[in-house]
Length: 213
Length: 123
Image 1 (cartoon, rainbow over the protein chains, first blue to last red):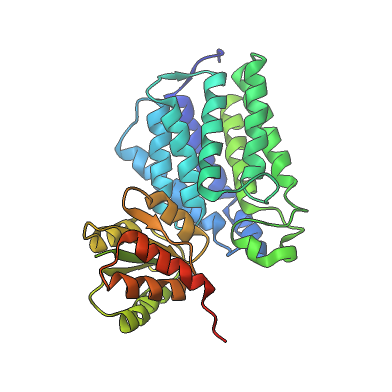
Image 2: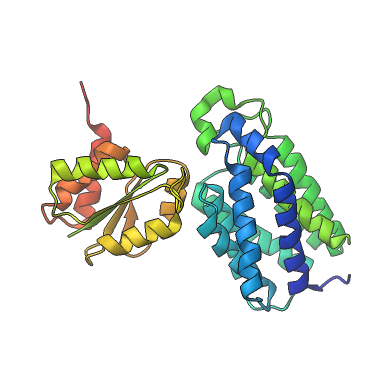
């Protein structure tokens, strides 16, 4: 795959792989959420990604931006928990940033991921260290931006972002939650991985799976 | 008149707070409860919230009162011209908002009254 040819089919494959992974890992995500939240994260995300498959079956967006915007709107409508507005905003903002371009470079993808992060932070007001999805997404954005500056190929850039997200998610284990439902638990939230950070890492791992195919 | 939407994770909670606020503040205020998910489970439904906003909007503005978590995030998605969030205790804020809206007060005045409820002392 060349440096600038992440096309609509690539992004559609990503969303399909993300849906598969979320489905396969939904019980693990729900277990994480049962420890410090309300035990619905896996089921909620799975419902959202299942609805995306149905939405995409009805209409075929012809640009990556339109595809991601549709993914975002569907997640907002169908998820039912906090992850709906948050992931929905992330995908919508990324889609909006990409506009009607038919192909996406590593630099575009890094900037779209930054737009997603900005949207999540505007909505939820979370900073790094609050034990949220931002703890996985922010390091992923930094890794991808750096890779873009260094002129890396998509495979390497996305690999770096996925690894950074995974490390970021694991780093939430010792944190005390300051945002979201877990923040009501205070010190009892320490010692558990944040479910939102964990699912962010899964979704970016799906992106790596697709780019290395 | 200013419209008010109560957004809760729980359908019954939103509905009962609406009953209580109506009993105290009067039945003339456009007030809607948007609690729970589309299928009646625990959570928040953007489509229920959107419909509730449409139902109470009389052209003088709408105040959204969320309980916590995804209710707040869903409310934030709906913010726009004339649609504002009151960052207030769910029960006390709802009652204060309904009482003040019933007087025909402006959006700003209803929002301010709801925010004052944060300082209500019970003892």
